Length: 380
Image (tube, rainbow, N blue to C red; front, side):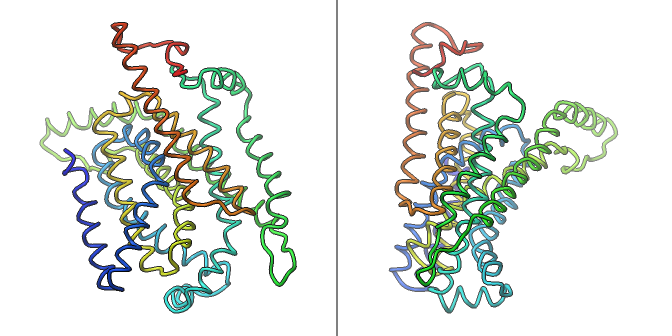
């Protein structure tokens, strides 16, 4: 099971490390390995959240997530995304941006650094909305019940998460962004840039999340029709298209997953510049890490880990909230990537051990947790 799930990740790791050695010797191999570990540590919470969505999708779309989704994640976000940032911020063509990335690494890094307020605002707002919508939803099982119970009551107020997100964005644009960067000793006002980028992140979440939610609500109808189509195909001996069988709900959940992954990858891409300016090594290291995040997501789904350790999803969403705040703070202040990674790891580890304690408590009481009231599953 482990080899089947992580097999391609092991293969890509071997190929990536070999290419690194061929590209720039053993030093390059070390850099790529460090980048891969950085990506995995920063994106572990991503895997947990992805698993919660992926388990609702059928086998076909899970395969798409591991094939086409990987191409989008590796080549789109880890290779093309930094180039697009440079092209837009420097107002140059894509070919010129690639030339800068390969031949003028220092200038390339500077352009990406200049674009950081936009990236941080977009990604921070998208992730913040995920966190807010999670904590304002009333759930049967609560981890930190003393906090989640009153927040669930507040969540009954319409559009509360959007209002809070907009307030956070306004505060960030008026405080962090005003003096985010200095050039030639003069302060540069980034407030408008941060505001526009943050609103774009919010709109992206609302559009993609809204479509995903709409089609998810129709998932049962789709599944019923697909079952009937399967039965009809068996009777007539015809075949049913795999895409048709997947349903619209799965497609929009796949789209939501890709946007979510893109938002998670912002900190990894930016953090990579603290290790190397070389876009080739960056793509190799982050690409390897992205593969493991994908494999880990599928492993969590197939092992039913989220069902066994019910607080993991809570911990991952709290990690998302922390990452959103960190991204917004980095508009002005530099935060070490080690801290960013540790925050997520600590929160997920805490939720995991809380789940273990809960399972032991239920086992001792002779229960299985089905229909467990919020007070019992508080984890505190």
